[in-house]
Length: 311
Image 1 (cartoon, one colour):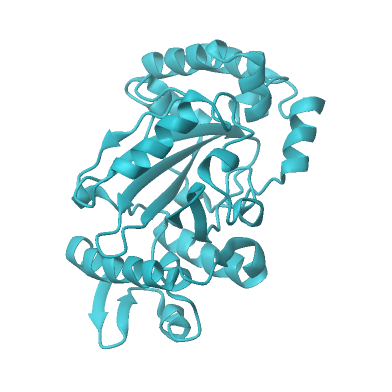
Image 2: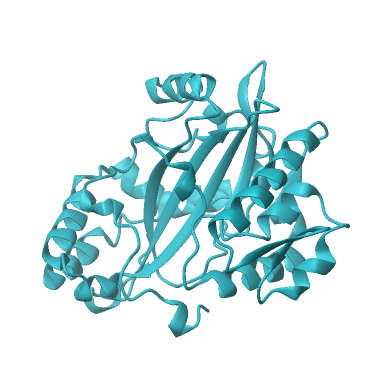
């Protein structure tokens, strides 16, 4: 459970304001200075990552032979970027980075693969994509905070297959082709970002869901919020995703930063009315397949009613 002091009073990102639509690609240019994010949940999330890695290592870290060069490059980029942008948190030492308030990380340097070590330095999860004959595939990943998927089930698979369950993004769709071309055209000097979001009943950051469990959720359409009051206590799970092509290996690093916001925090937002109305409008615009994929079919009307009450 996230400590109350680490829950945001105001959401950092509000893609449901209409700036980012669900089930669209929505890539936007990213300033390198804003590549990594740090907020008040930094200490809790880094400690939570260490706990999850220790308890679920095989489920949250994968790497294929041949990905070592990209892993090392990612770690080197972070070791360069973090002290330059967050000197109050990171300090260069002879063995790498020292993180203020997290001496436990010093003892984890040598035994761990480079991507695993890199992922424990930041709140973001890290995924490496390599180009092969079938397109861009997931070749390595450190994923402590999955949003309803399992890393092991996506490992080694190309993007179109990874996105197969997503309405409108499976193999052979226009979106699948666009993503492949975007990955091919991505340049090292031009990183991009996008946002995704979902709604969950609790505040768990570690939220895996297998393919079978996802199908069961879509077909069973379980009720997670029994009334409007319960819906108002929901958590909005915002994913800030970035993509950058690694300059040395030419592979792609995909970062996923989770912001878990109590939906009730919208009540204190200065743009409460506009945000709540736009949020409700986006939920109402989803079709049945999209609602089933997000696990919101049974609860959509109660969530909309809660948002309308906030507005």
